[in-house]
Amino acid sequence: MKAIVIYFSRADENYFGGKMRYIDKGNTEIAAEYVRDICGADLFKVERKKPYAKDYMTCIREAQDEQARGERPELKAELPSIDGYDVVFIGSPIYWGTMPQPMFTELEKLDFKGKTVMPFTTHEGSGLAGVVSDVRKIAVGADVKSGLAITGSEVAKSKEQIRKWIENNL
Image (cartoon, rainbow, N blue to C red; front, side):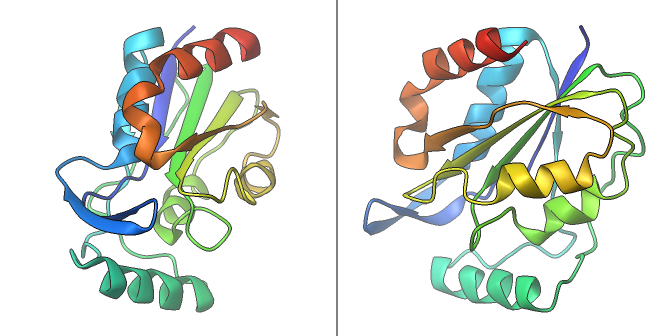
C-alpha cells in the first residue's frame, strides 16, 4: 500500500483552549508526521503562495474573507497527480466548518477515482465539522473512510489515537 498525506498546517500565533500562543510547527503538520511514521506515507504540505498573516486575528480575517468569496488561492507548489498512491490521507485544521481554501485549490485538481481516502482534522472544539462531506464531494469515485478529529492542543499525545484509526480503517 503506497500512501500520501496531503495537508495544510499553520504555525505562528495559534489558538489553544482559549489562549493565543506562538508555535514553530502547526498541529496538523505534527499529526501528518505521525501518519508518515506509522505507515510510511509520503508528505505533501499545501501552502499558499502568499502566506496568511502570522498574527492569529489577522489570519482568521484573511481566511474568512477568502472563504466567503469562494477563492482558490495560488499555491507555492502543486501536487500534479496522486496516480502512484493507493491511500490518500487529507489533513486539515478547521476553518469555519471546513478546510482552509488552499486545500480546495489543491484537492479539486486531483483524480481520486479508486483511491482510499482518510480525512483527519485538528481543531479546538469543531471536531470534523463538514470536512468529511466536503472531501466526499471532491473525491469522486474514492472510498472515503471515517474521519479522525484531533484536538490541536492535544496533538502531541495523539500518535496512538492515529495508529488505531489507521488500523481500524485500512
